[in-house]
Amino acid sequence: MKLLKSVLVAASLALSLGSFSTTAVACEDGRTCVPFSAAVKTIDDHIGMAIEAVAQEHDVATILGHIKIAKDTSKEINENDKVDIARGRANGFLKKAKSAVKKGKMDVAEDLLKTAKVKFAKLDSLRTK
Image 1 (tube, helix red, strand yellow):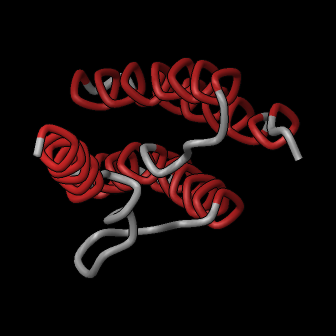
Image 2 (cartoon, rainbow, N blue to C red):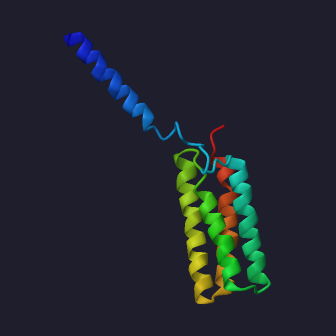
Image 3 (tube, rainbow, N blue to C red):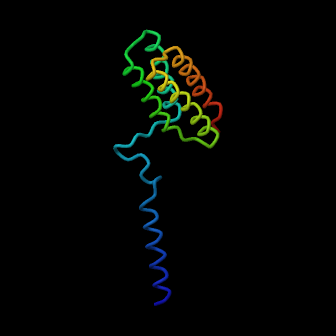
């Protein structure tokens, strides 16, 4: 009886831990699962579109929209610690660019976006393959 009780407790504990696993539900419906290369390409494209929008003097909402999509997509990059640290630093440039756009400093924002684009492009070299 004592052995049966121990087995049941251990089994229920294992099942409960397995049912709340985040890796078990990582790519369910309604959740995005973007490969590394696709995420970096999307980020690069939207930063490029933001730079073009700044150069062509588009409205602030368009520029901020591209920056937001780039920042949101960067959250999907999940490789290793080095990549995560570099991603965070590159995101810092996007945050500064967003602030510069809101303040109307478009020349500063353009430089920050170009720097962010270079930083995100370097993420691939930090990946472990």
